[in-house]
Structure formats: structure tokens, C-alpha cells
Image (cartoon, rainbow, N blue to C red; front, side):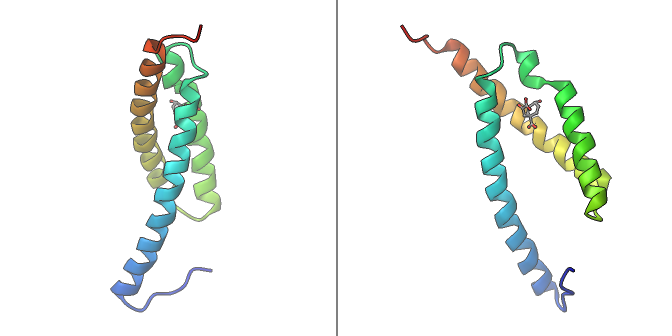
Amino acid sequence: MDIRCTSLEEVRQGIDEIDRSLVSLLAKRGRLVTQAAAFKKTTDDVRAPARVEQVIRKVRELANEAGGSAEVVEQVYRAMISAFITEELATHAKLANAPSAP
Ligand SMILES: O=C(O)C(=O)C[C@]1(C(=O)O)C=C[C@@H](O)C=C1
């Protein structure tokens, strides 16, 4: 059960606390996405549109189960994955240009 806030300050304290957790989880997710680049051959593999749609379907379900907005969660996830794809493409390009081990 969510705590009922009695002031805007209390609301913002709650939001700040959640942001701390979210940013930490985003950093952790980012490190996993970076590792994914090493397992992919082409830039199409990096973009993996079918996987993106699978993730979106899943997080919409999770949002509904949690009593949140599936629309908001989808928008947030599409923006987030787009940023991670940019980062993963950069990692993929670096790996492709790196000299291979003897
Ligand atoms: O699942 C992958 O293959 C990933 O690289 C992760 C991820 C994601 O952020 O969820 C990122 C890039 C792809 O477009 C698909 C999904």
C-alpha cells in the first residue's frame, strides 16, 4: 500500500528516493546492454526490433499488474531503449574496429 503524502515536499522526497533507485537500476541495465554488443554480428542484430517489441509487450503487462499506466511505461521504455541502442551501437562499432587477439 502506498503512503499517502500530506505535502508537496513529502511527495518530492518520495520521488527523489525512487529516482535514486531507478538511476542505479538504469546503470546496471546499461552495463548488461553493453555486454550484449559483444554477442551480436551486425548493426541489425544490435537494433533487434523483434526483441524491442517483446520487451514492450512484457513491460505493458507488468504495468497493468502494478496498477500503473501501460501507455506511460511504453513511452518511457521506447525512449530508454532508443538511448541504449545508440550506446550499444557505439560499443559494437568499437569492438568491430578493435584489433583481434593473436
Ligand atoms: O536484448 C537485446 O538484444 C539488447 O541489446 C537489449 C535491448 C534493450 O535495451 O532492452 C537493447 C537493444 C535492442 O534493440 C533490444 C533490446
